[in-house]
Image: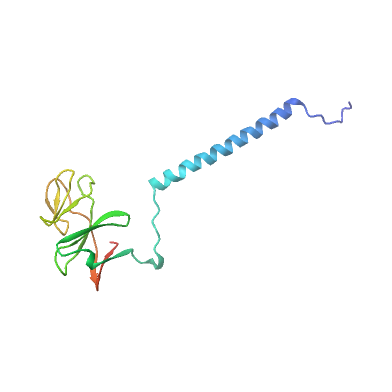
Length: 155
């Protein structure tokens, strides 16, 4: 063998193999970390949904779905919401989440009020606290009757 020949030594072959294995382990580790980090990030920092045209989000409910003195529970803005119809021409839309500890309220038609099953909080048809531990009224949404529909809008 002459001095000019390039002979690959076992140590350089092992170094190349070691480098390749380290690169692959790092690559798959990074892909796995991103696969875990993305859903965790989406949970911690949810994106706001963009509305076409820049307007506010709204929902239409047929007026016939709620009888006078009744209520209907829906999901509005991805949250439990209750639509109340205390009279023929009056409607209200309230968050169904109690302001005390976040339990979902129930509608008691006989009493004409919303009641929290967790600690006995009570609210009227406008969300005002009637009794119990809730520190604040229920969050309300702009709502109106438009023909044969109840229209709930984002605040």
